[in-house]
Image (cartoon, rainbow, N blue to C red; front, side, top):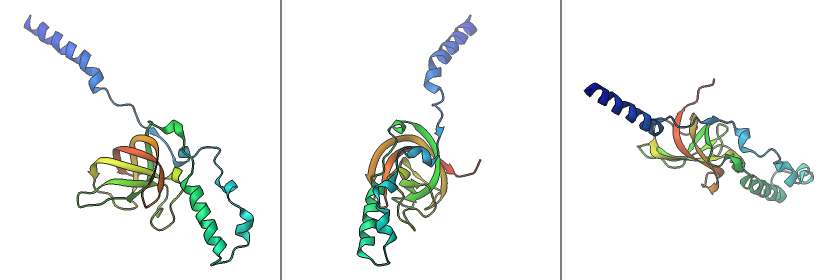
Length: 176
């Protein structure tokens, strides 16, 4: 009799506890092109005729670079990504560092972005925030990140991001 009661209690616990311990939904693996609206054509906002006649040091070149930066910093995002659980590759650009690691960084699509070259368009920069300091990675480490994506623009000083990601996991990048 006692074993039946225990078995019944275990069954009831398993039945009611299953939703509590069920695995979280899987992360959808995405690439960088998924962050760019299909109809975005930044080149249409720039006057190519002006660029063809420019010479080094030309004041017009400085003005055109400013216009280009404005176009890239205001790059449109994909609203349907808001709230999506994603997994994506990229390179780390730490925003804060300490001996404990870093808790904020930019994820960028190519090595050197925001550090050795101008920042990519805002829709190609993801501002990643971790609740715990991230250890074992450094500037320009190639990684996979997983987390919940938000469509939100932020100027970090290293670049304007069009997306934010609440970090659930980070791991070294390994090609498939």
